[in-house]
Length: 401
Ligand code: ADP
Image 1 (cartoon, helix red, strand yellow):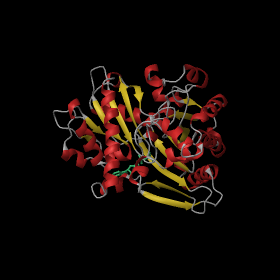
Image 2 (cartoon, rainbow, N blue to C red):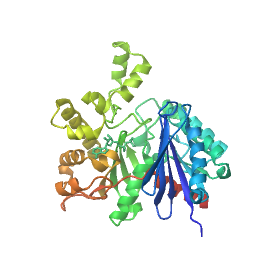
Image 3 (cartoon, helix red, strand yellow):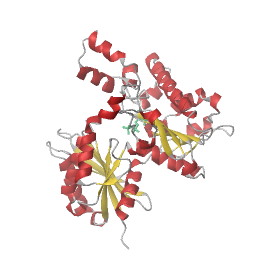
Image 4 (cartoon, helix red, strand yellow):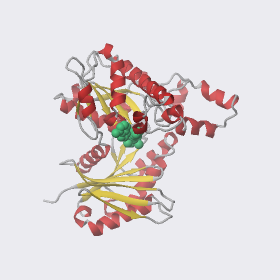
């Protein structure tokens, strides 16, 4: 019997990540990235069987050229992989209110993704290009393309979480509301967490912290998202690598009226120059930040601000848990690896029955999964995220239906 593989495609603004995954045994057979499009540095590289292969692309490279290169190369080098790819799963950042779950891509779905571009202008248009190019490069899989949305997991959050305190017509007419993001990651780690703790996901309440360059916290009740820290866009919520997270909107009036900053400069400042980068005035990289905590006052302060905001979100989400909190889950590059951030955050939450075990906390990093709490604490789990696997599994299910 032949194996069935899924190609997962994740188009970023100037990069393309991809993976070939067996959704049944959950093994990633090949994974890679193409980067630096439209630059002489452009390349594509992938890992297979524990070794890395790298090829330079032309200066005028793009998502299409990278996908075409990938299709042709794997066809020649690994025909056994190519022949067994039965479908393609695309990560799509914003599904608006239309997409509450993953769907098979049709012309109508493409129109829906285009419509939601207004809320993710840096991502959705590029991801549409990714779909079109994938159809060209894998024409035999034209009707086997699936869209998996970052927002769809959060479509269960109730009105009281998703409506802003704005005149109602902004929602009714323009659909301005909280949509959240990182949904695939929050869904994946909550499911894994319920399995690890031997609980049914339908009866599992947890707070998931996806901490990476972009960071968000989600309140999950009975396996469903009921609140999340990102909003209309991924700018809201926690302090992030370069994004400001929650701020008083009046700061924007001040920047514009008093500082004479135009709207593009303000947007760029809040999105690319703020967060940990803005506060440290050095970097957004938590590896550097963790190594230099207590050596540099700005870094120490930035960490305290990050932890303060994160612990406030976790604490506020405990009241949404219907008196039963089964676990706190850390994931993402920082959540999976930063001993410092996990320790400082959990220390602040002692009053809520959370207590970290220093030794376990130090040991669980670099892709390890496990509990990091003392016995007298609510379970605190570290679970490496695997958004690609969840996309592959959703794709497989939809194709088989
Ligand atoms: P993205 O949102 O781009 O997917 P990641 O989930 O890869 O981001 O997380 C990137 C962040 O994780 C960076 O700030 C990086 O410094 C941090 N990180 C990665 N490894 C470690 C580590 N060993 N210790 C502390 N932070 C780490």
